Length: 252
Image 1: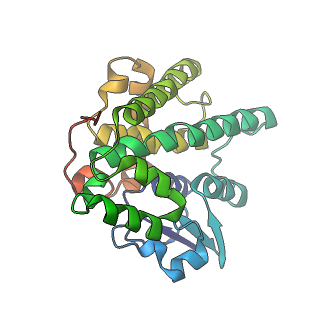
Image 2: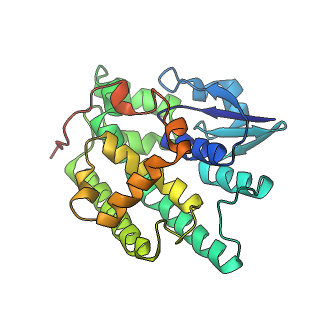
Image 3: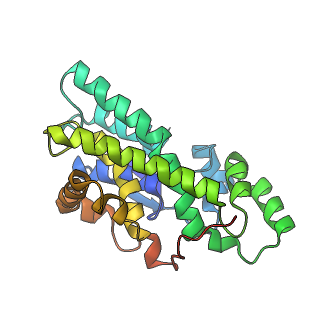
């Protein structure tokens, strides 16, 4: 039995859902309400001590970290394949995945919180915000403290957008060799970067690739045409469906 503890709007959850749908696997859907801090309850922390989503439970074994989950699914359910058949190709795909986790997956959090999610904390004064972050978000408390209740400063926003542009530039170069990042085959590399690109579109920032990276533009259109994409982004999966996206203005 496969069980997925996830949140619809979580970018990390989205990549795991797409892997599951691409492999046509049946799974039990456990929705985790992040706004209600259900990911920080003792029951959930017993599954995932990091207190983040998603968590996959397979026959009673908890697997954590979204890219680890995607690779686990590829290992346990190898067909249909989402990785190259040869060792060199798999190494190249894993190199993409490590870059994508280190750079765009982290960078997309800044505009996501700055333009939408920070609004959850607008009612708190500085002292209450600092205490709440320390108490219930220990593993990312420094991220939240940099943000504050009014969003991030200019340096943080500029750095995150620059990292996302660097990602798209790398994608543009790679896509000269085929419709997907690894050439002719759709792989986990495409799945891992997908939520960062889609989140930018949801935030109204699709001009970042539409104006400069035509191959990325075509890649995103092909991605959206896959049947698994619509299933992954079921109603309620985008921030703009549940909250107001504020303009990309910055402090300082």
